[in-house]
Length: 113
Ligand SMILES: [Zn+2]
Image 1 (cartoon, helix red, strand yellow):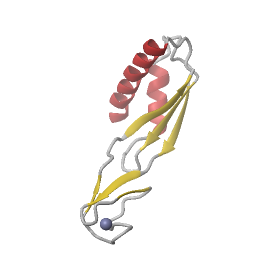
Image 2: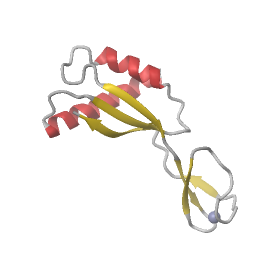
Image 3: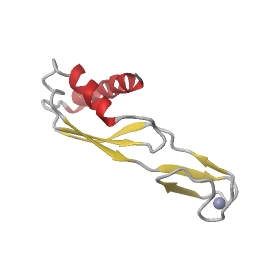
């Protein structure tokens, strides 16, 4: 069920954007999903279509999902790097003290109106 609450927050963000930019019809929304997130894009799509069916502006927008990258910080050498998968060693110094810094499950990267 957590896709339901995620979709609710997505729609809230979209409402704000629509007001801010005076958008009449939303065509496409692109998302980036963290490789760490347990999110089913199909569920987001399902809830989105269900929750926006009465809303002429949001209704029928195409949803596009891209796989994001995880950002890491190395505590040994202080460098930052990204990876598509969870890794356990720094790519620069092979140190094991690395920390995932970007833990957003899903974010809106662009909208088309
Ligand atoms: Zn390092």
